[in-house]
Amino acid sequence: MKILNLLSLFATYLLANSINIEDNVGQFFSSGHTNNWAVLVCTSRFWFNYRHVANTLSVYRSVKRLGIPDSHIVLMLADDMACNHRNPKPATVFSHKNMELNVYGDDVEVDYRGYEVTVENFLRVLTGRLPPSTPRSKRLLSDDRSNILIYLTGHGGNGFLKFQDSEEISNVELADAFEQMWQKRRYNELLFIIDTCQGASMYERFYSPNLMALASSQVGEDSLSHQPDLAIGVHLMDRYTFYLLEFLEDIHPASKSNMNDLFKVCPKSQCVSTPGHRTDLFLRDPGSALITDFFGSVRKVELTMETINLTEPIEQAEQKPVNTELQKEKYSYVDQLPVSEIIHQKPKQRDWHPPDGFILGLWTLILLVFFRTYGMKHLKHIF
Image (cartoon, rainbow, N blue to C red; front, side):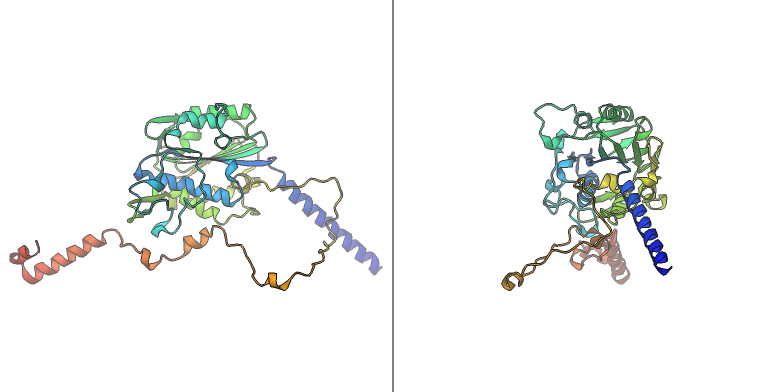
């Protein structure tokens, strides 16, 4: 009798494990995509738009950290802030105060830069209508099994986004481009994120299926900047992208966080503006769409027709004796992109900057003390 009870318990355990495995497999293939792409666009020129370049480069680093390679990223930067003559530290772009995090790095691959960032080139990249001479690195080589992340940042208004202060793309043109992509089977699912003033107006005209959109502000609202740096002289990032990236730093390739979590990353109390999102065109429940379905990369798998027993322990291969002299020097991998540590650590003393108005207040105090001590007749001794 005890043997029968044990056998029944063991069978129940195996059944539960098999159901759990099937659920995991079903979740893995629920999105139906086999590859990931990202199109990241900064549309602003000039030094005072430093934050827009930092926004785009920060998203670029996040998607690379989560597994999307440069070959599947189309990066468009309208200005080269790293080499700008106003930059106090050439070849760097910082996204956090006290110049702690250089998002430009040593391995940034910019595909479209400067005057190449135009409305025409952007639409050609999306729709695939590029000249035959265009190199592979400047093409969006997606298909009907591709999940695509499109991120835009810059200056915009009700129904338009500026490109380099010389031209605009309207929400109708953008909607038609996405429809062409769907008709030409260029995506499976598409996530559109825009950080600009009145950003929600850019997704009002979308009508293509399997598309989800997020914006940093509603119609009639401004998208505000964040983190001014006195040494650089400009704001380093926009509020929405700052809190978006702070959320992404806790995401890892095996994370179970879904799109509903992404919708909550920047409440109005932090962003000041009201972020918006649109999910009516998306064919899945946003709660079933993982963050890594768009910000990560599909892992390579090996298909086999053989039956594999997952319940048996895996036998470890016998370790062959190795020369002890070769084992003296041990190697280990350096932690890649420890951004979460950088964000929360205290600024170094050598990077301290006086708060706003500190110097002016100090001079005011000195003058007050002087007047109270010597009076106006000694004012000539100051100048």
